[in-house]
Amino acid sequence: MSIFDAIIQGIVQGLTEFLPVSSSGHLAITQHITGVAGEGNLFFNVMLHVGTLVAVVVFYHKLIWSLIKEFFRMVRDIFTGKFKWREMNYERNLIVMLIIALLPLFIMFFPIPGTDMKVKDLADLFSGAQILLVTAFSLLLTSALLTVGAYFNRKNSETGFKHMRGGVAGGKSRENYTPLDAICVGLMQVAAALLPGLSRSGSTLAVGEMRGINKQKALDFTFILGIPSILAAALLESKDALEQGIDTNFGVIITGIVVSAVVGYFSIWLFKWFLKSDKMIIFILYTAAVGAALVVISLIEIATGTNVFTGQPAVLFG
Image (cartoon, rainbow, N blue to C red):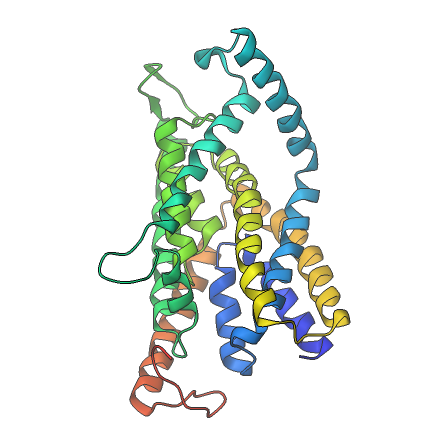
């Protein structure tokens, strides 16, 4: 892999990790088009995720620091008997709901009956496909979820969301999550981890909007939730990557990390601006168009058994 390839893939990773268009889907498409794919590229992909992890930590460093301080205050209150569930402030509520939202990730380690696979192995199966039909339909699903999320966000803004526990109807969406909200977001995050092309940020944002959460608070929750998720994915993949060996030189790896971090920081800012400006239609149309185009390309490749970009042999699951 050349420096140029590292820059291109770093840009793709940085943009698509946080914008609601799916980083895994676009990396699969980029590697499909260029022919730079396969297991030997795994360690480099892990390093690109490290770059985007740096981006979100830097962007949210103030909130992250306040959450760390509040976490230790909460632990102190728990051990001294002063902790009260109904009196949690925003930061404390966010900490608890982040923990709850991470619990569904354990589903990834459940065995699949009748096979020697675990649920998480489905991600390798789908992402390793030579023909990107699953990615195509996942992008279409992303577009559908963004559409539904935008509808609920508009509905919540116009009529207000009635918080059933408080029994109060207001003109604004909620800012605090409930355990059910967190579980729903966590389950959607599992689906996004399994399906290349299903945007993690877009799908979890949409679930938050469907549950009546303020769109900016839902996006913040999504990005903060991504920190342990990205870190866990990088650690899990690193073991496999190191066992396979590293066949990419140090300069290429550093280039990929830096590019994905810088572009990732910019894409977080860009996503928040698009959401605030109610311009999500751009991502809805984009993911629908790319998904539809990829369906056509995949059907052609299935019929011919050949990658239309590289001319290499291709099967649905190789």
